[in-house]
Length: 536
Ligand code: F6P
Image 1: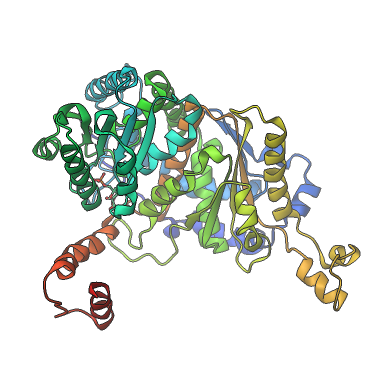
Image 2 (image 1 turned 60 degrees about the horizontal axis):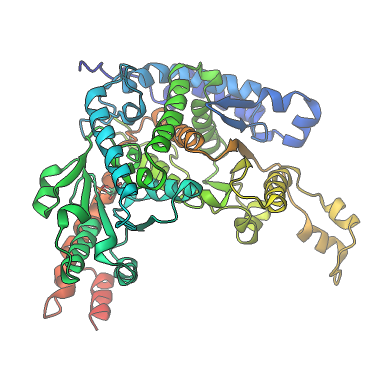
């Protein structure tokens, strides 16, 4: 494959569009009042709602207007986002610090679409899906344990939970990630080796946690009389040699151009395929591919992932918002915020640009959240009345997979109401006019406590149903959005050197924890004191 070069492009803050955006922010953006904007413009919702690959997105409750979008689209053009996107999709070295292409999109391209690596992708995909069907048909295998961490855990775990309605009662999927034995031990206590399949998922097959858990699972298997490792252990990895050394003969490979946090579409998705079947897994890929096509072809001004990435830059660098909260009003998406934390914060939690220059502006926001309505009874207090403005992202699903219509209506009413309340707020006068149930004290003071500033932004996504297809599209939307903000900021969104130092230090501390005698030589006072305390 002849990969094109990655086009040079200016960093966002060095463009004329950035200066123009700053001017727009000073003149209009900072002061935009959503309540007034809706009162002024009956067409605001229509003008600021978008749809891509079945994902509907209402951006109208965000602190922007059509003019802001024009300025942002111009920034995208001056930063050559379309050219850089095209180069990445064609296999350019989009991850230069590791010298790798970035081609998770190739994993979901159908046969015949002329995507890079088509033959090898479909060879592994077909084999992996055939194996998944074999496991599904094997009545002896009732418990499937995925051992992996980070991208080798979060995506599959999140998707299996999201699509549980399509699962089978005779197949129980388990996910073990933490090196903490409290993760693996209680699970093993419930399992029978004869009925268990372990999937060891690790791109590198060197990750400490995964290797320790896989070794412990193998020891348990053998100690409990298990003999047939070939039948009860499989590996999904780019490091087939290490998997073979571990004693695993059934392996599904993938490639260095698939980042760990972008890998659920590869062999790492095996647990998803076992849970929902080959056909549904292909639907998941098809949904993502539909979003890929949109990302690859839609003009910037209507390109939903690009618009969201641009909005993220607008909020982080102009409004200065430190974080973004994700609120899936759908219990099935309970693990989505955790998945998105890795996707966004491991991708864009960087402070130097591609040339190694320190950035003079903020990058990745903190991404966090819980499913609604649970979050309402925990941290929404801060979202409504706290001192930080935190944009919230609501994910609403029109049709549920259960028959409890009353509960679903209540769920959606709550999601809508929270977005409405964040925007509307409540003035002190309104609060004063209400009859306070606990009206002890000065009514004006109490009214101040009971008032809400409002004008707090949110985005609402609506899916008609949570299906493999719509989930695939939603996840691909997030992936391309993260690329967009990262590309604007001039980052390499595809490396993760920031996780390495802690790994190396843990490796050095381990022998000090287990050695006969306490050795604190060369350690700082705090680490030495804690080490001594932990050794008892
Ligand atoms: O430590 C971070 C990380 O490298 C992630 O990027 C990755 O998803 C995770 O560890 C697991 O890595 P592996 O799949 O190689 O075990």
